[in-house]
Length: 429
Image (cartoon, rainbow, N blue to C red):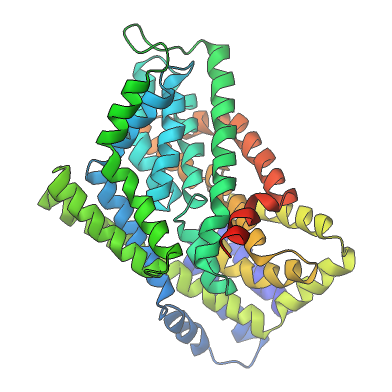
């Protein structure tokens, strides 16, 4: 009865378009009121106390750092470097977009932020060079998904906090899977570009120029130092992931304001304003998601789901396939933050029971939800790409299908080849 009330109310709320945070809170309140004797105040208490967490402070600071770097000239220099590396190839601008997103992913930790920062430049540029608008937007939207896999990653921080897993180890685990997805997207973009005849424009470099790479690398050196400082500081034991996020903000202000000199006082104010608005929304979602997950825990719902799945099979591959299918569907309807908070307490005990490492599972979970960024009807990255590129959502949703297939293939590799995720964390230990 309680489970039916909880998930039935949640489904109805989502069906009629209630914001996800409110839907989670309302469904938990409904289940408590009609199905238990627990006080309703437990929802607000848990939502409030769940945010009193030092590791969670990394999320708003990484958000702010990403916004500051986008406004401070970092994006342009990363784009120039990416252009020197791959701009000479068939479909060069699409290649540049993907490589630049991979660079920016190592700075922002956010999928939509990566799409906005890189897509804002590259989608109009591709359309101006006669690339199909749907394809151009789909490239940026799918490549932006890498932002939550290549460290630093906001979802990895959240998963580490909820699952009791080292955030530093999660960052290491995401490097190779993120590169795998990036290479897969590059191959897909190349094949489509070759079929459609997207070649460099006359006057552009038609072949690789090492001197251009050296020049743009030197101009982007301050931007490229950011992930080195963040990750080097964490793994060197100099500071925690939360402190690393603060360091990233300070570094972004210094580089944007005093080195590149492109971050104005108005831009600084606007960056803080955007970060505050985005973080307020995120924290409401996290708080009510934790309340929802906490209610499920005290009602032993995760245990019942776990027993059901383990009764189906004790083979970890079968369990992981079932979980992947579940997560791909969930990612279509629920945002990454909410899905992480709700599903981690349910699924983590199941996979641990069948011998899957929590770090490996964290990468699988986040990779699944990264695919959710480009799957309608939610598809946040698709909406961002549509907004910054001025392309109809429907066109992008159709054009993104080849990239979606590529990401699913990469997900299967990540799932069935644990060494891809575990090699660097094991090496570090």
